[in-house]
Length: 125
Image (cartoon, rainbow, N blue to C red; front, side):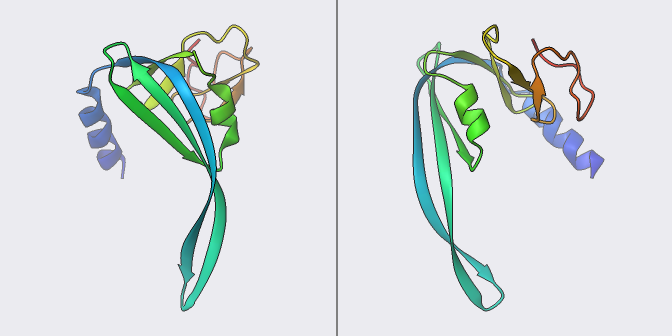
């Protein structure tokens, strides 16, 4: 398993770092059908989308299901950097934030901490 993870990481390292800005955000209530054996169930969920525009004019979308914390963390006008080796987005200005997301495991941490309380990795500040 570690070999597979390492190969994916190495492949992602070849991609360039991407800088952009949050230009819009939307939230939609959605429904999907899930099968449990012979039974079908309707599942309701929230889909949060953050729209980004790069310095070069390129556009990206971050779609998240049922995770409002990450959606609320980014505000329209915020500048972000995409780290391809971690497949994560880092917010440039964290000076007004009370928490930060770990770029390694993605967990929420208190901004005063220097290391992630879950995976013990150094937090990007």
